[in-house]
Amino acid sequence: MPLDITYQPVNVLIDHHDSEGKLISADAQLTAVIVRLDGQAHDPKHKGRWHLEARFGQCHVSDAPLFATPEEADAWMKHRPAADDTPPLEGAAWNAFRR
Image (cartoon, rainbow, N blue to C red; front, side):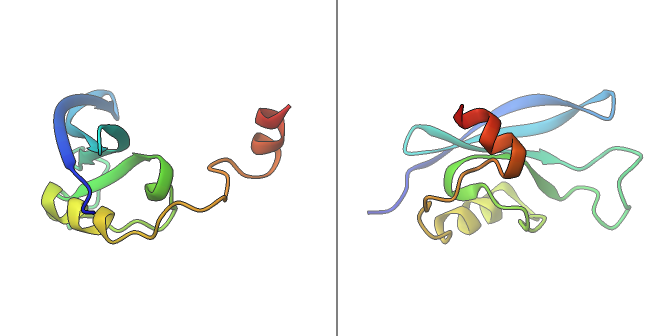
């Protein structure tokens, strides 16, 4: 069954200024926060692209690409494998959380 992906516009404070962002939900569960790269600190070739700023569940990966559009992020999320039992926190942080 296909995921029902929705976007909610939101301002995100990045590098001391508001950036355009979107909360992404899959089947009414918050899955990710994407933010448009537009700050002075960003590489000019990346400006305007979307970065996966926060990720949860099956989107909790460290190697997500930059996206040209929110719809491209949508397509990427829909093709992620189902979440496995790997904890979203690793090492000492995960051990402290489990206590």
